[in-house]
Image (cartoon, rainbow, N blue to C red; front, side, top):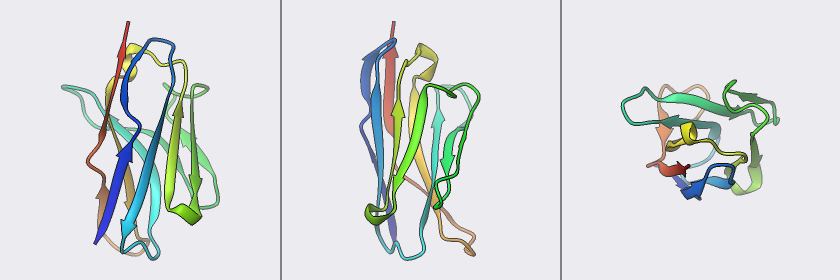
Length: 117
């Protein structure tokens, strides 16, 4: 069984910063943490940023230049540094993982990010 645990969310003012962490535990052999998604109230879950095991990154246009995704493969952890936060970044942030070749994807429980103006 795989567990993904997100942390680092909280309440921050517009223009502030937060750093999210996603740590994997359990049966992590071959597991790849793909990246971060978010879901705001009343909206669909959307991609925020992804990172390959080789470190190739991809960002949603709305966060480019403000967010940075990184990973520590030895710790089975992926990070999301969020700077210059905007009110529209308010959402529950989830990390996503899978084992290549398997159908199932794994999600964490999410961490709330609230940006106040």
